[in-house]
Amino acid sequence: MRELFDVRLSDSEHPMSRADLADAMAEADILVPTITDVIDAPLLGGAGPRLKLIANYGAGIDHIDVSTARQRGILVSNTPGVLTEDTADMTMALILSTARRMGEGIAQMQSEGWSGWAPEALLGMRLRGKRLGILGMGRIGQALASRARAFGMSVHYHNRRRLHEGLEAPLEATFWDSLDQMLARVDVLSVNAPHTPATFHLLNARRLKLLKRTAIVVNTSRGEVIDENALTRMLRAGDLAGAGLDVYERGRGVNPRLRDLPNVVLLPHMGSATREARLEMGERVLVNMRTFADGHRPPDQVVPSML
Image (cartoon, rainbow, N blue to C red; front, side):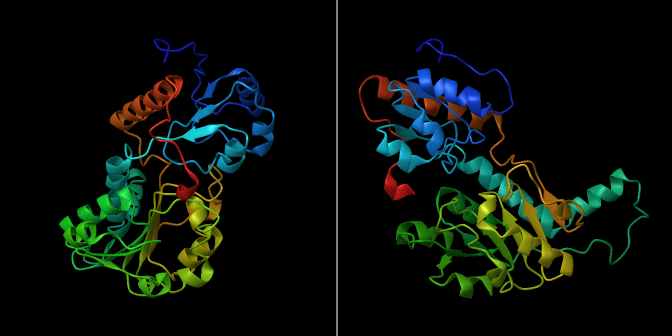
């Protein structure tokens, strides 16, 4: 960025304060936020006349009021695609670690609580032959499906639209128009849907109760898609076998009751945390910035149909 533009950088790993964001937006032509920078209507209302592009460093854009930005003539771009493989890897890792109770095993070893091998100790779920339900069959959902097939799982999915046959057939994936019907039949549920008004608490208490008591839930997408309190109650009551979570409904505010549950694997939003992904994200931001500066539409511009 320094080679191409006149840049002011935040060198801290911590989120910018609201005041710092407001100051930056009052002066900049382009703002490059991350997912921890909430760009809402009041902040956009105070943006300077020069601000014409918000080039988000990341794929998710639910922290940006895209509609208000659009009304003010400010374009928004993101970095789609570059996180697909890494997030799918992490999702599969969470499925494995939750199904095989690795979190409990690690805790035993770290606390020196292991008393040795026993026939019924830490019995988990075999993945081969089990049904994986994918909620949201975009790039990451499809990448996860290919991994699950390698583990011998059958793939089922619910999506706003059914995949084209050319994408669906190689995955041997079964489309369910009814989310409720799919939930009742799967052994593992992976949430790979974005957070939108339509997906907020899509997995509410009623829908979570449709899952088998032996099922596990994994979420590497957006925490707001699941009613976290309802999920916690079911896990505590033994109405679900386990959960693997990389995202949370209240961001960093993880439900303390979740932390105490042995059948839950919690990660600190690290689904895309590889060196390769971070570099590719930066490269996509630069492409969007440079294309915009040259007077053209950014290739990764967010349009209303995506929301």
